[in-house]
Image (tube, rainbow, N blue to C red; front, side):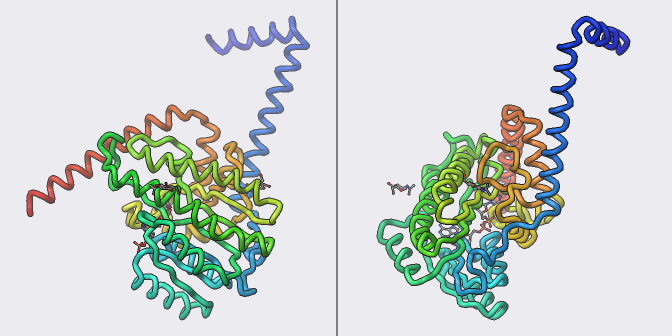
Length: 338
Ligand SMILES: NC(=O)c1ccc[n+]([C@@H]2O[C@H](COP(=O)([O-])OP(=O)(O)OC[C@H]3O[C@@H](n4cnc5c(N)ncnc54)[C@H](OP(=O)(O)O)[C@@H]3O)[C@@H](O)[C@H]2O)c1
Ligand SMILES: *[C@@H]1O[C@H](CO)[C@@H](O)[C@H](O)[C@H]1NC(C)=O
Ligand SMILES: CC(=O)N[C@H]1CO[C@H](CO)[C@@H](O)[C@@H]1O
Protein backbone atom coordinates (compact mmCIF):
# COMPACT_ATOMS: atom_id res chain seq x y z
CA UNK A 1 0.00 0.00 0.00
CA UNK A 2 1.28 3.44 -0.84
CA UNK A 3 1.58 6.07 1.87
CA UNK A 4 -1.22 8.13 0.35
CA UNK A 5 -3.57 5.13 0.50
CA UNK A 6 -2.71 4.53 4.15
CA UNK A 7 -3.36 8.17 4.97
CA UNK A 8 -6.68 8.06 3.14
CA UNK A 9 -7.66 4.95 5.08
CA UNK A 10 -6.69 6.50 8.41
CA UNK A 11 -8.56 9.76 7.77
CA UNK A 12 -11.68 7.85 6.69
CA UNK A 13 -11.41 5.73 9.85
CA UNK A 14 -11.09 8.81 12.08
CA UNK A 15 -14.07 10.41 10.32
CA UNK A 16 -16.35 7.35 10.45
CA UNK A 17 -15.27 5.90 13.82
CA UNK A 18 -14.23 8.79 16.07
CA UNK A 19 -14.59 6.76 19.29
CA UNK A 20 -12.45 3.86 18.10
CA UNK A 21 -9.92 6.26 16.66
CA UNK A 22 -9.63 7.99 20.05
CA UNK A 23 -9.12 4.65 21.80
CA UNK A 24 -6.42 3.62 19.31
CA UNK A 25 -4.71 6.95 19.73
CA UNK A 26 -4.79 6.67 23.52
CA UNK A 27 -3.35 3.13 23.38
CA UNK A 28 -0.58 4.31 21.10
CA UNK A 29 0.31 7.20 23.36
CA UNK A 30 0.24 4.94 26.43
CA UNK A 31 2.49 2.26 24.97
CA UNK A 32 4.93 4.84 23.66
CA UNK A 33 5.03 6.46 27.09
CA UNK A 34 5.57 3.08 28.73
CA UNK A 35 8.42 2.18 26.38
CA UNK A 36 9.98 5.57 27.06
CA UNK A 37 9.66 5.19 30.83
CA UNK A 38 11.05 1.62 30.83
CA UNK A 39 14.03 2.56 28.68
CA UNK A 40 14.79 5.54 30.88
CA UNK A 41 14.55 3.39 33.98
CA UNK A 42 16.94 0.73 32.57
CA UNK A 43 19.42 3.44 31.56
CA UNK A 44 19.19 5.16 34.96
CA UNK A 45 19.75 1.90 36.84
CA UNK A 46 22.61 0.82 34.61
CA UNK A 47 24.48 4.12 34.29
CA UNK A 48 23.45 6.40 37.16
CA UNK A 49 21.81 4.94 40.27
CA UNK A 50 23.97 3.38 43.00
CA UNK A 51 23.09 -0.06 44.38
CA UNK A 52 22.53 -0.96 48.02
CA UNK A 53 25.63 -0.27 50.13
CA UNK A 54 27.62 -3.33 51.15
CA UNK A 55 27.70 -1.86 54.67
CA UNK A 56 24.17 -3.17 55.06
CA UNK A 57 25.59 -6.71 54.97
CA UNK A 58 28.23 -6.14 57.65
CA UNK A 59 31.22 -4.74 55.72
CA UNK A 60 33.87 -3.36 58.11
CA UNK A 61 31.99 -4.85 61.08
CA UNK A 62 33.65 -8.25 61.14
CA UNK A 63 31.24 -10.03 58.80
CA UNK A 64 32.51 -12.68 56.38
CA UNK A 65 31.95 -13.14 52.67
CA UNK A 66 31.93 -16.73 51.38
CA UNK A 67 32.94 -17.14 47.73
CA UNK A 68 32.98 -20.47 45.88
CA UNK A 69 35.35 -21.00 42.96
CA UNK A 70 37.44 -18.16 44.38
CA UNK A 71 40.94 -18.91 43.10
CA UNK A 72 40.47 -17.81 39.50
CA UNK A 73 38.36 -15.70 37.14
CA UNK A 74 35.21 -14.04 38.40
CA UNK A 75 35.27 -15.73 41.83
CA UNK A 76 38.79 -14.54 42.69
CA UNK A 77 37.77 -11.03 41.74
CA UNK A 78 34.71 -11.24 44.04
CA UNK A 79 36.98 -12.31 46.91
CA UNK A 80 39.39 -9.42 46.25
CA UNK A 81 36.72 -6.74 45.90
CA UNK A 82 34.70 -7.94 48.90
CA UNK A 83 37.90 -7.84 50.98
CA UNK A 84 38.56 -4.34 49.69
CA UNK A 85 35.03 -3.38 50.80
CA UNK A 86 35.87 -4.57 54.31
CA UNK A 87 34.67 -8.18 54.56
CA UNK A 88 36.72 -11.05 55.90
CA UNK A 89 36.75 -13.67 53.16
CA UNK A 90 36.19 -17.41 53.24
CA UNK A 91 37.35 -18.78 49.92
CA UNK A 92 36.46 -22.16 48.47
CA UNK A 93 37.89 -24.21 45.56
CA UNK A 94 39.71 -27.52 44.96
CA UNK A 95 43.41 -26.67 44.83
CA UNK A 96 44.72 -26.00 48.38
CA UNK A 97 47.98 -24.41 47.17
CA UNK A 98 46.11 -21.92 44.99
CA UNK A 99 43.68 -21.25 47.85
CA UNK A 100 46.54 -20.36 50.19
CA UNK A 101 48.23 -18.17 47.58
CA UNK A 102 44.97 -16.34 46.96
CA UNK A 103 44.33 -15.88 50.69
CA UNK A 104 47.85 -14.53 51.15
CA UNK A 105 47.38 -12.05 48.30
CA UNK A 106 44.08 -10.83 49.78
CA UNK A 107 45.50 -10.52 53.31
CA UNK A 108 48.55 -8.55 52.20
CA UNK A 109 46.50 -6.22 49.99
CA UNK A 110 43.56 -5.48 52.28
CA UNK A 111 44.49 -6.66 55.79
CA UNK A 112 41.27 -8.61 56.37
CA UNK A 113 40.94 -12.07 57.91
CA UNK A 114 40.90 -14.96 55.46
CA UNK A 115 40.00 -18.63 55.64
CA UNK A 116 40.23 -21.33 52.97
CA UNK A 117 38.32 -24.54 52.40
CA UNK A 118 39.16 -27.15 49.82
CA UNK A 119 36.30 -29.16 48.37
CA UNK A 120 35.60 -30.76 45.01
CA UNK A 121 31.97 -29.96 44.23
CA UNK A 122 31.93 -32.50 41.40
CA UNK A 123 32.40 -35.40 43.81
CA UNK A 124 31.35 -33.93 47.19
CA UNK A 125 29.33 -36.38 49.32
CA UNK A 126 27.47 -35.93 52.63
CA UNK A 127 30.76 -36.04 54.54
CA UNK A 128 32.29 -33.30 52.41
CA UNK A 129 29.27 -31.03 52.86
CA UNK A 130 29.24 -31.73 56.62
CA UNK A 131 32.89 -30.66 56.80
CA UNK A 132 32.10 -27.55 54.78
CA UNK A 133 29.20 -26.66 57.10
CA UNK A 134 31.38 -27.18 60.20
CA UNK A 135 34.10 -24.93 58.81
CA UNK A 136 31.56 -22.10 58.71
CA UNK A 137 29.87 -22.56 62.05
CA UNK A 138 31.64 -19.78 64.00
CA UNK A 139 31.48 -17.18 61.23
CA UNK A 140 29.08 -14.28 60.97
CA UNK A 141 28.38 -14.44 57.23
CA UNK A 142 27.11 -11.32 55.47
CA UNK A 143 27.61 -12.28 51.82
CA UNK A 144 27.55 -15.53 49.87
CA UNK A 145 28.65 -15.68 46.24
CA UNK A 146 27.62 -18.94 44.60
CA UNK A 147 30.12 -18.50 41.82
CA UNK A 148 31.56 -21.93 41.11
CA UNK A 149 30.33 -23.24 37.80
CA UNK A 150 31.19 -25.68 35.05
CA UNK A 151 30.34 -25.58 31.38
CA UNK A 152 30.84 -28.07 28.57
CA UNK A 153 34.32 -28.69 27.26
CA UNK A 154 32.94 -27.75 23.83
CA UNK A 155 29.42 -27.42 22.38
CA UNK A 156 27.93 -30.84 21.62
CA UNK A 157 24.52 -32.39 21.16
CA UNK A 158 23.34 -34.08 24.34
CA UNK A 159 23.72 -37.45 22.66
CA UNK A 160 27.42 -36.74 22.01
CA UNK A 161 28.12 -35.32 25.49
CA UNK A 162 30.21 -37.49 27.83
CA UNK A 163 28.10 -38.83 30.71
CA UNK A 164 30.62 -37.66 33.31
CA UNK A 165 30.54 -34.13 31.94
CA UNK A 166 26.77 -34.01 32.37
CA UNK A 167 27.05 -35.36 35.93
CA UNK A 168 29.75 -32.85 36.91
CA UNK A 169 27.85 -29.88 35.49
CA UNK A 170 24.74 -30.81 37.47
CA UNK A 171 26.73 -31.53 40.65
CA UNK A 172 28.58 -28.21 40.48
CA UNK A 173 25.95 -25.83 39.10
CA UNK A 174 22.87 -27.21 40.86
CA UNK A 175 23.81 -29.41 43.83
CA UNK A 176 26.65 -27.21 45.10
CA UNK A 177 24.48 -24.09 44.91
CA UNK A 178 21.73 -25.80 46.91
CA UNK A 179 24.03 -27.33 49.52
CA UNK A 180 26.25 -24.30 50.03
CA UNK A 181 23.22 -22.02 50.35
CA UNK A 182 21.65 -24.46 52.79
CA UNK A 183 24.81 -24.37 54.91
CA UNK A 184 25.04 -20.59 54.95
CA UNK A 185 21.51 -19.23 55.40
CA UNK A 186 20.99 -20.22 59.06
CA UNK A 187 23.74 -17.74 60.02
CA UNK A 188 22.23 -15.00 57.87
CA UNK A 189 18.77 -15.56 59.34
CA UNK A 190 20.28 -15.33 62.84
CA UNK A 191 21.82 -11.93 62.11
CA UNK A 192 18.80 -10.75 60.09
CA UNK A 193 20.78 -9.59 57.10
CA UNK A 194 22.54 -11.02 54.10
CA UNK A 195 23.24 -10.98 50.40
CA UNK A 196 23.27 -14.09 48.22
CA UNK A 197 24.59 -13.69 44.67
CA UNK A 198 24.04 -16.61 42.29
CA UNK A 199 26.23 -16.25 39.21
CA UNK A 200 24.14 -17.17 36.19
CA UNK A 201 24.51 -16.90 32.47
CA UNK A 202 22.68 -15.71 29.35
CA UNK A 203 22.64 -19.44 28.53
CA UNK A 204 20.04 -19.72 31.30
CA UNK A 205 17.81 -17.06 29.74
CA UNK A 206 18.23 -18.27 26.13
CA UNK A 207 17.83 -22.05 25.86
CA UNK A 208 21.18 -22.92 24.28
CA UNK A 209 21.34 -25.91 21.91
CA UNK A 210 24.61 -27.89 22.16
CA UNK A 211 25.07 -26.60 25.71
CA UNK A 212 21.72 -27.97 26.81
CA UNK A 213 22.86 -29.28 30.20
CA UNK A 214 24.72 -26.09 31.14
CA UNK A 215 21.81 -24.00 29.85
CA UNK A 216 19.29 -25.95 31.95
CA UNK A 217 21.37 -25.69 35.13
CA UNK A 218 21.73 -21.93 34.67
CA UNK A 219 17.96 -21.58 34.16
CA UNK A 220 17.60 -23.39 37.47
CA UNK A 221 19.53 -20.57 39.16
CA UNK A 222 17.08 -17.99 37.85
CA UNK A 223 13.94 -19.70 39.17
CA UNK A 224 15.66 -20.80 42.39
CA UNK A 225 16.76 -17.23 43.13
CA UNK A 226 13.30 -15.77 42.60
CA UNK A 227 11.70 -18.39 44.87
CA UNK A 228 14.33 -18.10 47.61
CA UNK A 229 14.29 -14.29 47.37
CA UNK A 230 10.64 -14.24 48.38
CA UNK A 231 11.25 -16.80 51.18
CA UNK A 232 14.08 -14.82 52.73
CA UNK A 233 12.66 -11.33 52.31
CA UNK A 234 11.31 -11.28 55.85
CA UNK A 235 14.80 -12.01 57.18
CA UNK A 236 16.24 -9.02 55.35
CA UNK A 237 18.26 -11.26 53.04
CA UNK A 238 18.59 -10.26 49.39
CA UNK A 239 18.87 -13.02 46.81
CA UNK A 240 20.07 -11.98 43.39
CA UNK A 241 20.67 -14.01 40.26
CA UNK A 242 23.42 -12.32 38.24
CA UNK A 243 22.81 -12.71 34.53
CA UNK A 244 26.18 -12.83 32.79
CA UNK A 245 27.18 -12.63 29.15
CA UNK A 246 30.81 -13.48 28.28
CA UNK A 247 33.62 -12.43 30.64
CA UNK A 248 37.35 -12.99 30.02
CA UNK A 249 38.30 -16.21 31.89
CA UNK A 250 39.55 -19.77 31.69
CA UNK A 251 35.98 -21.05 31.54
CA UNK A 252 34.96 -18.85 28.60
CA UNK A 253 38.33 -19.53 26.90
CA UNK A 254 38.27 -15.84 25.87
CA UNK A 255 41.48 -13.93 26.57
CA UNK A 256 40.84 -10.56 24.98
CA UNK A 257 38.46 -8.03 26.53
CA UNK A 258 36.08 -6.03 24.32
CA UNK A 259 33.04 -3.84 24.75
CA UNK A 260 30.77 -6.87 25.22
CA UNK A 261 33.35 -9.01 27.05
CA UNK A 262 34.80 -7.35 30.16
CA UNK A 263 37.64 -8.57 32.33
CA UNK A 264 36.51 -10.03 35.68
CA UNK A 265 37.43 -6.89 37.65
CA UNK A 266 35.17 -4.55 35.65
CA UNK A 267 32.41 -7.13 35.67
CA UNK A 268 32.53 -7.71 39.45
CA UNK A 269 32.71 -3.96 40.15
CA UNK A 270 29.40 -3.58 38.31
CA UNK A 271 27.78 -6.45 40.27
CA UNK A 272 28.84 -5.10 43.68
CA UNK A 273 27.94 -1.53 42.75
CA UNK A 274 24.40 -2.37 41.60
CA UNK A 275 23.08 -4.68 44.33
CA UNK A 276 19.27 -4.56 44.38
CA UNK A 277 18.97 -2.99 40.91
CA UNK A 278 17.86 -5.30 38.09
CA UNK A 279 19.40 -2.98 35.44
CA UNK A 280 19.12 -4.73 32.03
CA UNK A 281 16.79 -7.42 33.43
CA UNK A 282 14.29 -4.90 34.81
CA UNK A 283 11.46 -5.72 32.37
CA UNK A 284 12.46 -9.28 31.50
CA UNK A 285 9.80 -10.85 33.73
CA UNK A 286 12.49 -12.55 35.84
CA UNK A 287 12.21 -11.36 39.45
CA UNK A 288 15.46 -11.21 41.43
CA UNK A 289 17.57 -11.34 38.28
CA UNK A 290 20.00 -8.52 37.60
CA UNK A 291 22.08 -7.82 34.49
CA UNK A 292 24.40 -5.14 35.90
CA UNK A 293 27.35 -4.86 33.50
CA UNK A 294 26.47 -2.00 31.13
CA UNK A 295 26.85 -3.70 27.74
CA UNK A 296 25.30 -6.94 29.01
CA UNK A 297 22.44 -4.83 30.40
CA UNK A 298 21.77 -3.16 27.04
CA UNK A 299 21.90 -6.55 25.30
CA UNK A 300 19.47 -8.09 27.80
CA UNK A 301 17.07 -5.16 27.49
CA UNK A 302 17.23 -5.28 23.68
CA UNK A 303 16.43 -9.00 23.84
CA UNK A 304 13.46 -8.26 26.10
CA UNK A 305 12.16 -5.76 23.54
CA UNK A 306 12.69 -8.09 20.57
CA UNK A 307 11.00 -10.85 22.59
CA UNK A 308 11.60 -13.70 20.18
CA UNK A 309 13.04 -16.74 21.99
CA UNK A 310 12.83 -18.86 18.81
CA UNK A 311 15.07 -16.45 16.94
CA UNK A 312 17.68 -16.45 19.74
CA UNK A 313 17.59 -20.24 20.07
CA UNK A 314 18.22 -20.86 16.38
CA UNK A 315 20.91 -18.17 16.27
CA UNK A 316 22.65 -19.81 19.27
CA UNK A 317 22.39 -23.22 17.61
CA UNK A 318 24.20 -21.93 14.52
CA UNK A 319 26.84 -20.22 16.63
CA UNK A 320 27.54 -23.37 18.65
CA UNK A 321 27.69 -25.54 15.51
CA UNK A 322 30.49 -23.27 14.23
CA UNK A 323 32.34 -23.27 17.56
CA UNK A 324 32.23 -27.07 17.67
CA UNK A 325 33.47 -27.37 14.10
CA UNK A 326 36.40 -25.06 14.85
CA UNK A 327 37.21 -26.87 18.11
CA UNK A 328 37.24 -30.26 16.34
CA UNK A 329 39.43 -28.90 13.53
CA UNK A 330 41.88 -27.55 16.08
CA UNK A 331 42.10 -30.93 17.81
CA UNK A 332 42.65 -32.64 14.44
CA UNK A 333 45.40 -30.15 13.51
CA UNK A 334 47.16 -30.57 16.86
CA UNK A 335 47.04 -34.37 16.80
CA UNK A 336 48.73 -34.35 13.36
CA UNK A 337 51.90 -32.91 14.90
CA UNK A 338 52.05 -35.27 17.86
N1 LIG B 1 33.40 -16.51 32.01
C1 LIG B 1 32.24 -16.34 31.36
O1 LIG B 1 32.20 -15.94 30.21
C2 LIG B 1 30.96 -16.65 32.07
C3 LIG B 1 29.76 -16.36 31.41
C4 LIG B 1 28.56 -16.63 32.06
C5 LIG B 1 28.58 -17.18 33.33
N2 LIG B 1 29.75 -17.47 33.95
C6 LIG B 1 29.72 -18.09 35.28
O2 LIG B 1 30.63 -17.47 36.15
C7 LIG B 1 31.09 -18.39 37.13
C8 LIG B 1 32.60 -18.30 37.25
O3 LIG B 1 33.18 -18.62 36.02
P1 LIG B 1 34.69 -18.26 35.63
O4 LIG B 1 34.67 -17.98 34.19
O5 LIG B 1 35.24 -17.24 36.56
O6 LIG B 1 35.41 -19.69 35.88
P2 LIG B 1 36.96 -20.06 36.05
O7 LIG B 1 37.83 -18.90 35.67
O8 LIG B 1 37.12 -21.35 35.33
O9 LIG B 1 37.14 -20.31 37.64
C9 LIG B 1 36.60 -21.42 38.25
C10 LIG B 1 36.89 -21.41 39.75
O10 LIG B 1 36.14 -22.50 40.33
C11 LIG B 1 37.00 -23.44 40.94
N3 LIG B 1 36.47 -24.78 40.65
C12 LIG B 1 36.36 -25.35 39.42
N4 LIG B 1 35.86 -26.60 39.53
C13 LIG B 1 35.66 -26.82 40.85
C14 LIG B 1 35.17 -27.93 41.60
N5 LIG B 1 34.84 -29.07 41.00
N6 LIG B 1 35.06 -27.81 42.94
C15 LIG B 1 35.43 -26.66 43.56
N7 LIG B 1 35.90 -25.59 42.91
C16 LIG B 1 36.02 -25.67 41.58
C17 LIG B 1 38.37 -23.20 40.31
O11 LIG B 1 39.45 -23.56 41.16
P3 LIG B 1 40.01 -25.10 41.25
O12 LIG B 1 40.22 -25.52 39.83
O13 LIG B 1 41.25 -25.04 42.08
O14 LIG B 1 38.94 -25.89 41.92
C18 LIG B 1 38.33 -21.69 40.12
O15 LIG B 1 38.62 -21.04 41.33
C19 LIG B 1 30.55 -19.75 36.69
O16 LIG B 1 29.39 -20.05 37.43
C20 LIG B 1 30.19 -19.54 35.24
O17 LIG B 1 29.16 -20.41 34.82
C21 LIG B 1 30.94 -17.23 33.34
C1 LIG C 1 22.76 -34.17 43.70
O1 LIG C 1 22.24 -34.37 45.01
C2 LIG C 1 21.34 -35.45 45.12
C3 LIG C 1 20.69 -35.45 46.47
O2 LIG C 1 21.35 -34.69 47.42
C4 LIG C 1 22.07 -36.74 44.84
O3 LIG C 1 21.20 -37.85 44.96
C5 LIG C 1 22.63 -36.67 43.42
O4 LIG C 1 23.40 -37.81 43.14
C6 LIG C 1 23.48 -35.43 43.24
N1 LIG C 1 23.80 -35.32 41.83
C7 LIG C 1 25.03 -35.20 41.37
C8 LIG C 1 25.18 -35.13 39.88
O5 LIG C 1 26.00 -35.15 42.10
C1 LIG D 1 16.85 -7.46 43.18
C2 LIG D 1 15.44 -7.97 43.25
O1 LIG D 1 14.84 -8.23 42.21
N1 LIG D 1 14.92 -8.12 44.46
C3 LIG D 1 13.59 -8.63 44.69
C4 LIG D 1 13.65 -10.13 44.97
O2 LIG D 1 12.39 -10.60 45.35
C5 LIG D 1 11.84 -10.00 46.50
C6 LIG D 1 10.58 -10.73 46.84
O3 LIG D 1 9.88 -11.24 45.76
C7 LIG D 1 11.63 -8.52 46.21
O4 LIG D 1 11.11 -7.88 47.34
C8 LIG D 1 12.96 -7.89 45.83
O5 LIG D 1 12.79 -6.55 45.48
